View 1 (cartoon, one colour):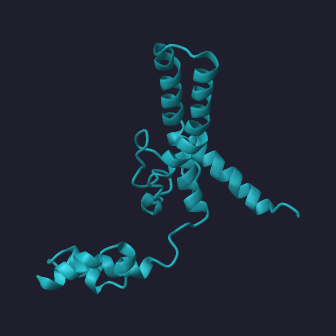
View 2 (view 1 turned 90 degrees about the horizontal axis):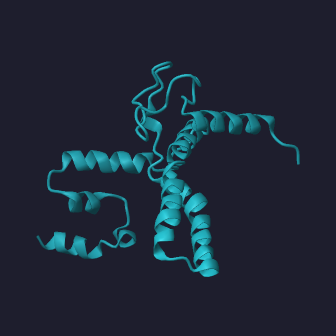
Length: 169
């Protein structure tokens, strides 16, 4: 199977913008205002970063890519050499701590660039979220009423009891 050149160029662009923290549209403006805080919009091309929702994805990838293998190293160190506790305080704790924290900005940049380039969004939830937000703003009686009227299955959310309690009120 031949590699798709468009897919390869997308991947390179995502990696380039994410690793350096540049705007995924222009490739020039900075993506971050602070360490992990995104700009509101790109100062170069006015790209609105409202689409970006990496949530805790960067922490998940950091833990999976860094913490998991380093945990095996720490266990191996303990089993093989049986060092005193202070050795773990000097070696293991900083290694795992810095190893998980340092790549967060790069991973978040990669996720934001990937969301923009691939036009990622939650599939099929636009109408549901619009309905929930509209009902939540117009109904001052609270969340239970919003959920009672929403198309979400209360059984799936585990809220049957709350609905019964709300009906009795």
